[in-house]
Length: 637
Ligand code: SF4
Ligand code: SF4
Image: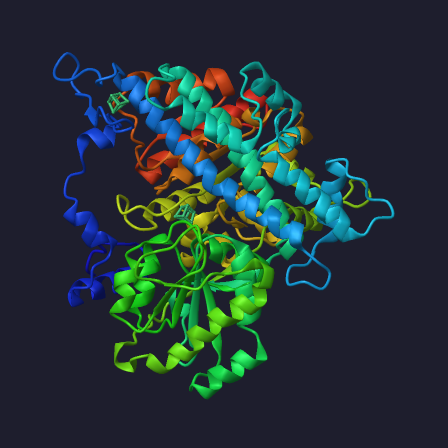
């Protein structure tokens, strides 16, 4: 068989080759044109934050420029660049969280946005000490939303959600002055401190980055997840399908791509609207087939089982099928390349957010005040476009995979209740999981998250790493494009238990789960923080003591850098499959991959080979087990 070049996923490989044969440009072509990446940029050695520059520092000590014109050293330049990446990542997740908080603030009993999960809202209201007795649920919601919106700019105090962490973790943050305050302030402080002539202490800049990253994981992202659950429902396990084979030849295919569920939830409703379904029939289609891409796919599949069209590297390939009437996008991870590409097909590329207009796209602003109407207008545009489909160009790959998705923390607890002895233990807790980990039936847990990156063969890093981990009885939780890689590779089907080690396979059978659990979108990594906090509290230890690890095998975005940083700052060792642009500074490399452990009890590891990374992660898990005095030998399931 011919060797796969682009991807381990047969659908991606097939379509990428089709593009190559037909001379249609994709990300892989543009990557080729880049040839060897700039060595200065790759190592983080260039600075262009003022007009005296751009400056670049020689990678060879004692030879060439050793300082920028202002005197900034390589360490300072790299630390500033890194801090800015963290600030940008934190800003995207936080703006996402802010928008969802606004939507909760506008929710009305007779409006488009309603409260779906009252229990979750009431729990949060209690957590934030909001009066709930004898009050209308919407009044409570609006007060909770206002408190959340204040988290972005409050003048005093630290973030409310930091209180969810175990006491030991809070002390670590307190001791190191990492307890973050207002979300926007942390981002603004980084932009200020990294301005020319401001902070020139590499260590302090990394510290600022760590602090700001908590404003993402325990701030903006957690607000995004909690409020989306309140508005649109807490995910529960449900079946779905994944890969471009979910497109239908005889239906209007609409792909929602981006991040915010405030748009995609309305798209789900609009795609079921009887008038629009009738219109679809009138234009010759059998129906409307909605599917998702990137994190938007994760949001709607977790809550509605909407099919997953693909992950980051597949967005252009979706157009190449010739069967997509519209790609409807909001914010983040949307390739501008879609604009010229969609011009070669009938596909409409529709932007909807004032934050992400793209030249060459059709902009149809999504107005939250009249959300459903707005969504219907957009879907209508897609339906009418079915008439323009050129059937000669249609090529839908046959392959798609079955997956079970929807493992929120609440859903995991409810699955675990299947093995609770109701005479001895109360239900609705993570205790059975803690017991399985403590006894050694499951060795530990790994969060595998992040993007695709053409530096790694598409999905290879994710899938190989996850396979290796589950084979060694490490349960995997996953989000983002990593989750979609797992879904496409069949790792989220219950049949994937046969790929798991004996202990994990047994637990999966008893609890009735796959060995790889889909926990949602990138902001939903905050669910993992909640999960590990509860586990740590149950075992009366810090998060950094738990036999849990994290990995981003194919990361690419600034968001992923912010995520990796808050995961490490929360006490979880994290493996990166792509080298970050920091290697020009020994000091920064030493902090991230070594000294961070003395500060926050965890550090970064860089290992592009997923098999080696898996072995290192397993070793780390075993070290943690030993330190906790847990069974170091695998026990019979
Ligand atoms: S801040 Fe310093 S290193 Fe950066 S571009 Fe300006 S002069 Fe050069
Ligand atoms: S995992 Fe990465 S590429 Fe995928 S949606 Fe999230 S940030 Fe974007």
